[in-house]
Image (cartoon, rainbow, N blue to C red; front, side):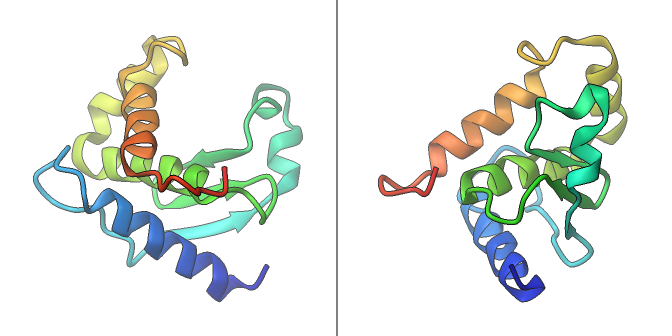
Length: 119
């Protein structure tokens, strides 16, 4: 998948998140990049994931992931832009399923999903 297509998909994910008022400022995507890195998801603790958000990077197992997953991962970047230290602490001290930032990212995806989404 061409890099400009991934960029367009990030812009669509941003447009979805811009509909929400979770934080006082919208997500900034000017320095966000998407990297397809299947090797990362072969690491023992990463095998169950298809996408993973870092500070300004979204790592994907494959380029053909859904727009819903990109929206979910971009929401994590938004969370980090707003509450970096709290988010980091919470990820270190809370189980994945009960992590409030994971719950919020799943909610952001669900609340902005189109009925004919490519899930």
